[in-house]
Length: 130
Image 1 (cartoon, helix red, strand yellow):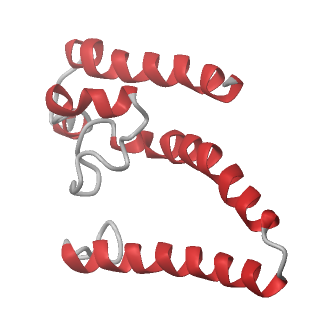
Image 2 (cartoon, rainbow, N blue to C red):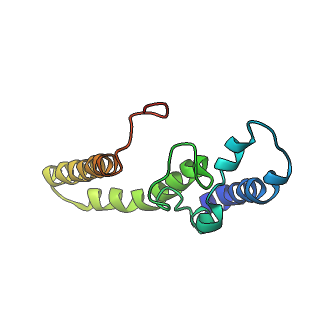
């Protein structure tokens, strides 16, 4: 809970400032890059507040979308919430072979999920890839 209370206030303040106040502070030939950073926030603002920004929307173009650079605190909090349960389940097993199998299974599911998402959305290897 302390982790959430430490991360959430500044995370929300930065988001709300950038989304609601930031558009009134500037303009110019490169301003469109700022606007792309908050392009669909009217639809997906709730994913920022629930720390599910890395899941919703399910697909966005790199460097576009609602608060796209805020994915790291969301992932950090999600890992912090689910990792203890996985670690507990791993240590609860009596056999080292079962522990190894569980860890390998979870790793393979994560890798397979990443490959599927990349293949399904025809994603490129980097930000500047065609």
